[in-house]
Image (tube, rainbow, N blue to C red; front, side):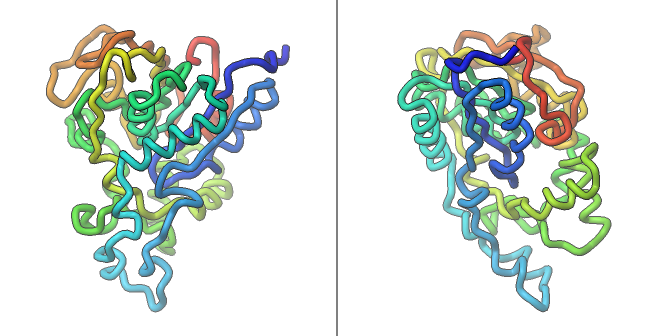
Length: 293
């Protein structure tokens, strides 16, 4: 049965290196169900991206690509959060909307929720970073639980010098391209995966992952929220997704209760596991269920 047309609108936010384009199939499913939905670009990504000149300069110089300061080095969590709030306002026309954030989009959702909790009816973290109060998202990949993540091996250059977590998305190296495909699109057909790789943003601003948000009970803590675990995720392993979501912070021991929130305001987040890789947006587009959001 089609969903009623007066349902809460849904805004979709991608993670690092991606863009609104990665939600295409999810958008199709939501709109077919009668849900008003919008996918947006994160600050420094999609149509807001700026690419390092060395990426396409010929002859290609790998050293120059590794050293070039990113044109989005100045983009930070403040800008990303403010942009998301503006995007939410645009979709809801002042009324609250459901926001679904993937991967690093979770850090931006957390900031936007703290800034404007009245605009978010439900916050959904889809295999996303859900940082604790005052903790940068960048702290979580350094945790032991992140062992097995394949993203680090893909990065080019020193992010502290370039201001960005950089991928060589134009690389002709078959081994590198296969590693990108396996990391982000492990169960997507190769043709579609190649098309997606061509759309990736090479530079993810370090300032977004380095930023922190001070959470309060009447801010982000007042928003109903759900954490969806993608059990086959190669970018945020399941152990780390549990650590960067409702159950642990880098400074606290594990908490075994799945819906507990360590160092986070109430209400607690509910967890919903799905058997899917990080590419669930493309390979498993019907990700919504009443049990999740």
